[in-house]
Image (cartoon, rainbow, N blue to C red; front, side, top):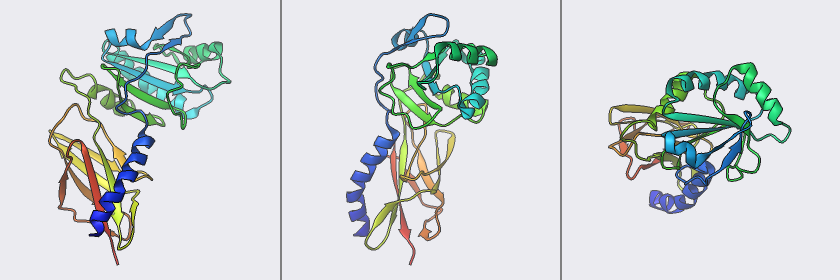
Amino acid sequence: MKKIIALACLLCLLTLAACAEGLVGQAVPDFTLSTTDGGSVTLSELLKAKNLVVLNIFATWCPPCAREFPEMQAVYEKLSDRMEIVAVSADPGDTMDAVADYKAERGLTFPMGLAGDALGFVPLEAYPTTLMIDRNGVVGYTQVGMFSSAGIFKDVCEVFLTDDYTFAAPELYAVGVGDQDYMALQGVEVTVTGEGRTYDLTTGSDGFASFIVPGAGDYQAVVTGAPEGYAFDPDAAQPLEDGTAIILLDKEG
């Protein structure tokens, strides 16, 4: 009975988690951004030529932004025939001249400029924030914080570049269930397997974890670790039905 009650209450939790993810699954309104070369880029025009637009929002004073740009540049040099990176500063203290100098100093070759008022639809939590906009103009993935390596960035980009790509953003939620209560669980480790792929995930403070796959398939989620005080069956696999899995863990004692 307690699990039935928890599942009923979970509807509110899922709504809050979806809000936290923000833009994933939403169509992006067309926008035009001015660039350091005196020109501009328009999303709809870019998507006529490329299968993916990576929109990176940064600030010139941001150390993680500076660390990830060389990784992005390395991938861009290999995949620029199929993807475009557009990096824009949303910091009101940055000027176009400052961004131009920043770009030149780092040898970056993708378009860069200022966000201005064009990206008001993006709820910025921190710099850098990156949106993967797929060939259909839909946000397929967001990342708050830097990509730590070119390999990780490349792996994410290539999901959107496959010939058989269709939008899919699976997600899962971990919920701890006690006798009279339930709560979102942070730090639950889950391994998802299927279609020849493996994803190792850890839930965040809202009990939510998301990942990206090239398309629909048969995926199974198994809990491999949980916070102290919660029990789980390491052999129990749960299918991701319609791309979503709800993981319930019993509170011990």
